[in-house]
Amino acid sequence: MSLLSEERKIIIIELLDSHGKVKVNDLVKQFGVSSETIRRDLEALEIDEKLKKVYGGAIKISSSGVEPPYLQRFTKHENEKEKIGKLAADFVEDNDVIALDVGSTTLKMVPWICRKNNITVVTNSVPALNELIEKKNKQHFNGNIIFLGGEINSQQMTVSGPIAEDMLKNLYVDKAFVAAGGLTIVQGITSYDELEASLSRRIMSKSKEIMVLVDNSKIGVINLYKVADIDNADVIICDSELPEQWKEDMKIKNIVWVNK
Image (cartoon, rainbow, N blue to C red):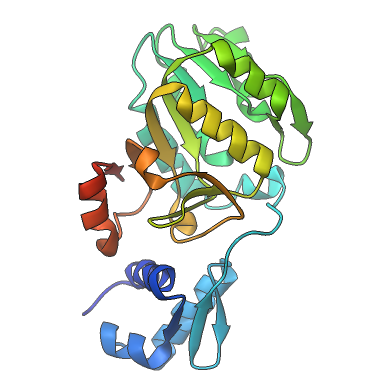
């Protein structure tokens, strides 16, 4: 089974998602590569905080700690996020009303959706708001902006909480673009922050179609707070291919996976 390093890493994460641990010897047999190659893969995944190396293999860890500040996350996996943002923007049509969730990945949609005509953007992302205002003032965006007010998280540059959720009571959108802090088949869409998870759920409940944006570093990751089951997604937009072990579930759940 000759696979590239990134393909092996995805399968390793899938195995961890299913079994909680992996052994170097088993992976050597499965992939037909040397133990040194497997150890390099595990080291790279540990640096990305996707697992914890232990004697003879690795165990799964949950990214349930504190989310890095927005400015630290902005440049991480930037190329992947650029690709996802462009792919996601292709789902936006003229005259749509869309919800743009918080996150450095959804922010990458802004330059592309500004090319659409007469769209309305509902968002609780301060960076997205600032960029949309700037483009509107320069007449590079002819749509409307609705900002959800509420409690401000200055480090993450987001708004959430009861006030923001209350604003959503009388709003309905065509498409919601939700960023996932973690994504698995069993645990679904998860988030670092309880208030953000709650608002994301409310946004999803108000949308006709739900698009989940996730880069490959979030696949197989479980955060502390659940946003929704993976079944709630109509489309998952990623920078990498659908994991092999997820294909049957995606087919059963009728979820479209987009990566190109």
